[in-house]
Figure 1 (cartoon, rainbow, N blue to C red):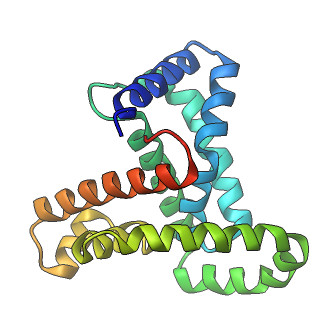
Figure 2 (spheres, rainbow, N blue to C red; figure 1 turned 30 degrees about the vertical axis):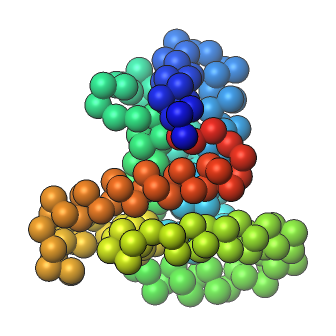
Figure 3 (tube, rainbow, N blue to C red; figure 1 turned 60 degrees about the vertical axis):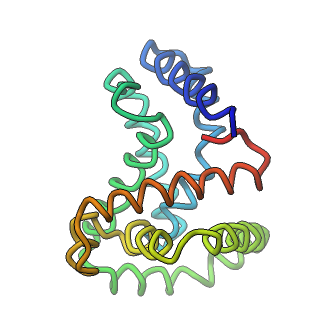
Length: 193
């Protein structure tokens, strides 16, 4: 857990290097975070092809907007997750409705299963790890994160739906993400973000 500030500093240095056009730093950032961001987008979009497209868009945005990253305003991981979540929700809204997206995902499921049985197995294993980690959060943190990241709701929408103050929703989101990141980084053997 003590590696968190060092990891944040290392990630910030990668982003600053990307801002200077360093392709190796960009590749390192991609290698480190693409699977985490892809999993988040897949849960929001329910479509592997859509999530793959959005992942490419997110990293293009990272390449273009790295100069705008400001470490004094937040952690690199938080900046990346915010970009990914926003892009995924934008894509979800652009398709017209969640029902159409779910229907499209259902139509593509047979092709996906034929092409990627091993990916489905890996996703199941990763899903089990994430579900166990979510089980260690408080009910309030877990439900807030589920509404935000799985249902694509904004913090304001969550506050309205649950009748909780916006500040409470923000606090639960931040605390839940921090604990979840620590649990997952320990599980996947990567430094905490």
